[in-house]
Amino acid sequence: MTVIYSDDNVVIADKPAHTDSVKDLPRMLGADYGTLYPVHRLDVNTTGIVVLARGTKTKAELERAFRERAVKKKYIATVIGTPNPRRGTMRNWLVKDGEKGLVKCYDRPQTGALEAVTDYEVLRSCDGLSEVALYPETGRTHQLRVQLARKGTPILGDGKYGNFAENRRRGVKIQMLRAVSLKFVALGGIVNYLSGREFEVEHEEKR
Image (cartoon, rainbow, N blue to C red; front, side, top):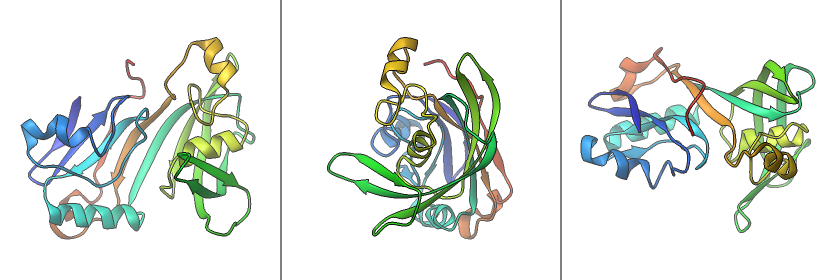
């Protein structure tokens, strides 16, 4: 576990794979930083930047910022195939099936569905794979994974929405999705001093 920033109010960590943002991170970091409160989450096998609050006032302010889209995030994914066009916006409507732990993706509004919006650009392509930068405007469950699968270019290694045969052929068992950058656009209250700050991690991680 690598902590990339900490102060009296927040801890920003580089989450490894096989780790639950809500259940595992506070316990793993608690010995050094005391009681921590997750304010957003990454999927268990998605790696990268996660923010935790060190108090309830900070938690409330950061949760408000994420809810009001005052935090800008960037992810890097390795996908099977190449998205067409190579740069654009994915706009879908998602319905979560809590019993099955899956999300259904639609191209038009549906009853009970939440809109999901993600800007993307293809960075490079080789050997049937592409590296894609993703900039989500919303933060829905499994958003990036299900949107890319809907587009026909699933994330390599994704065990729920991916190309299972291709995952096996390439020997990849963990989804190749990493949160590489997080910028606080406008914060208020106790953490207003972080407004304008951006935190980054390396694109590549040993798995």
